[in-house]
View 1 (tube, rainbow, N blue to C red):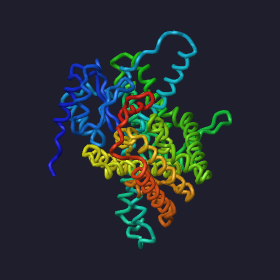
View 2: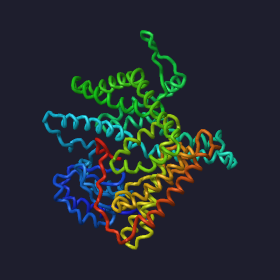
View 3: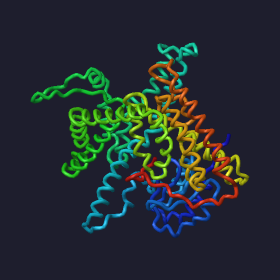
Length: 492
């Protein structure tokens, strides 16, 4: 199959956002191009909306957003070939509006709100580049569990060379997660990603890991014992370490002579930050993060069908407001810490239900544009990305979105009743292998929960949409702008 050419759509987009001279910078998330323009009035919305390959155009969060869908990375690359690397914006802070100087309660509230948003944005921005490899690794581990199931005659022996080799491929992303997160966090902060990656390497260093598994004491001061912890699979200690490295690195560059900076800035930064992380911040943060993740897992399981019904019924509402980005690192922490996430099992059904709702529109509609968009959006949702479905069709026909919520509430209820859990990150239909118990391949409880809940979510959403949620006589509603991920314009 010939490689698809994205140069034409890229050229059309550049011309109709006002040309290269009107563009400050460009980033992209999982479904759209996000332009920072000098003058948004120069952009031609109507031409772009009618351009093949463009789903919609949205003005939001100080950005001019061109919704593409699942092919956004290809279109982004084609646009950047036209613009050049100087137009890439990895941070996005330069376009943030400065706050008014009035000293009043509202201003203080805005400062607190922005600080919290920036914190969430930093955490999710550090995680988002890593999500893909975590998801892929989870799928591989799920497939390995499937192949080693006693019910299938143990097609692959856990002691075989093939298993051990493939398992290493799947485990590497989790084992060296501090390195990956550190690199991504440093890129987010516009600091030195290599220094952060080296600090992450210290946390994942084999001898440190072995000591951490045995909780060996490093030293004692005043009766306080400092112990090594196992930081493989960890997230939050490295995020803080990257921030500390940024602060210390900037300070050193301001105070050291230029001829000493190349060697002594990374040397001092690595020594100081790695030591602080191992001795002080790491044990505290890792303990809190693991405790919080385990607590939420326990609450979801303990609440049974109630938690499943509520979370399933309302999770995709969080997507509308961009609040779901606060859940992503928490789910990752649950899986990396305890090896499973009951919360993510419920979230998975919400993706299936929104995909089923938009699929019903695609199959019922006789309008070619809605059929094409609906099928593409459904495939995307079944692969774990619901944004094209939500913003392309479901929210613009409100009943379609509500139909999807009904289906996901039923799916969540079933997941809660069966106490289903996920052992990988990838959800929706493509993430079926994430429901195989990696610790006990013979336990199929969660996989059966996935089958029943996904089937229920799919049928309920599809049928409610078909008979109540949509018909071709409905007028398409006004666009609902996707909320920017809190505190950031980082790629997602």
